[in-house]
Length: 553
Image (tube, rainbow, N blue to C red; front, side, top):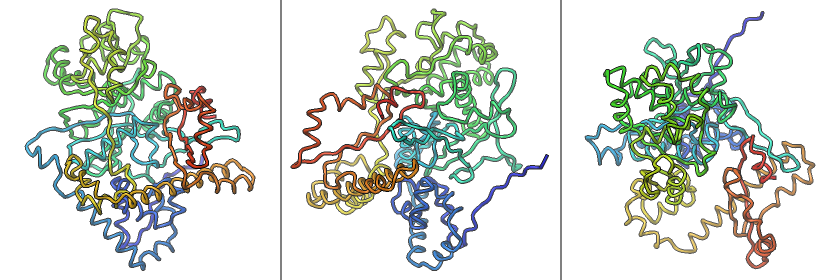
């Protein structure tokens, strides 16, 4: 057998450009337009090919190009400016520090997916995008928060369409050393790992850190040599595999996540469960408290629930993870014993009706039961959620259930275009981004001339159309379309027409085809020569969702 050796190849960056690596390793660059432009200037075509992964890009860019940039005074000035901007961002006082200087708050934010940037495929849709925006906003505000998730080797799929319009999936394998990730180590230099008990064995997980501005995101990874092949696959795919794979992932996220924080020396005062995938963390916190302080399950449960917060996102019961009693017993029989609970009492924690022995174990029910507060993500969703889970409180009127709602927000800087941000800088002043709740700043919006605002909007629409054309041409090239069809891609869409975007996951309940209920009316709107309208659709269906794929087709 020929011996195999593993090598990690790192780019040879000239000393004058070394700050590129420091900037690339902090995901702050994903929401700073000047930092993004710094990497685009290296090689614009390569930037597109690398899916906005600057570490990978630095490994691929030619040494000749790097040498050329060392002599480019304009680029060096740009680099120095962005480097100083990052340092200033990390060091300057924050809203939280100024408002709550004596606070001992420390929040651990758990989620199965995090959407930070396209090149890190750790997300599938809105849940992950919200989680990513939470981290970015917490960084801006200086909130003492850490993220906890899983590091998927293949993550969620990359979509392409065949000639008939059917969605196809590909799962490129991630090379963690070409991503802005750092492996956590012990003082002796060895990788820091945690163990989680599985039936008949223990599974180990490494801990990687992605730095999101001021906020660290810790990601657990089981895909390394210490684990058996089937356990290395736990962190293979986001939302992939069967129920057995899902319960392993959620065990690793919840139980392993709490153990990872302890190994890192982090003691959270609040754990925020973003959706029910991480709900097992509540059981681990209870077990640890019972073991440490010698208290009963009831006492530990009350203390832990007081410091757990749960956000639910699903609007249909089928969207929540449930496990059969047999599967739960297989993975948790020893755990229930450590909690001093009988089989039925343990399973009752995840049942709407604890006495119903035929009811499966729901992660959402577990999260609701073991959290002091549960919120939906909009007022309407709050009403839907209260109806969904009313069976947990059969004697309480639906409107009085302890399920509230907080309307989702976004990380403003991450979603606002550079053109619009520059317009705000010019007319609102520099503090619109650092003091977003100051209404006096937003009152100045009336000072923006209508013509200038409209020109900015038109410029953004033209860039959207150009982007859509490029992506369409790339897709046609990948599936071997004839040259004439590829050339037509350069003419699709009208840069001057009213453009409506629909970008959602293609789950059937999101009703992507609702627009086609009245095709004659739609044809009149789209075909009006005086007021032209065009629509851009974007979205993916889950690989197993054939109805969603049919919607796309």
